[in-house]
Length: 180
Image (tube, rainbow, N blue to C red; front, side):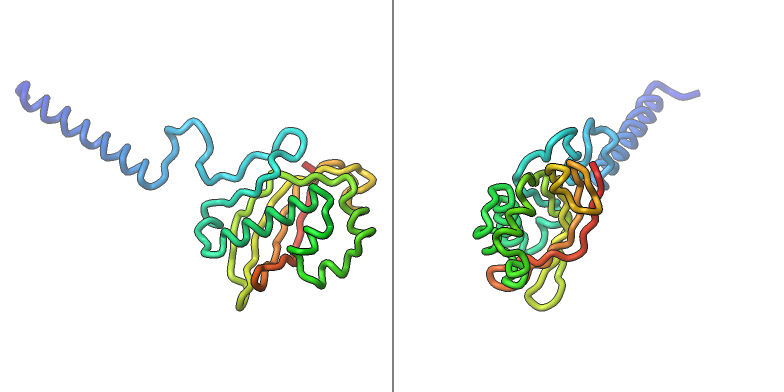
């Protein structure tokens, strides 16, 4: 038969095991006790519109040593598109990219475009002096101004942007788009 002291010792040991399990779960990232998504989860696509025009970085992108240069360049890039300021846009893209879109063609391409909810998910080295930024964003536009193969008013984009040089210049890479 157990004594009162043995019962208390068993209860104390059980409590210690429970506390240790909770601490271990918290330390390894267990978020079962949180009401929301993990802090590094991508922001949800807004129900309407494009969301904030402010470019954000994931924790992974933030860890890259060139994150601030990438953030600054991408913010300038999306600000230029939203303001329909081709000169500002041309200052952050490669000269070859700017030459491919003269003023009239560029203005026609962004005539009704708004971009937002821009998130840099990852930044990777892509060769000497070059990085790739994996970016997602939402755009809205008149359906007539949408890409010919995706005639919708609201698009969720995933794009690889190459940045090279000092200061880094942007050259688009692979692109995936779908209605959102």
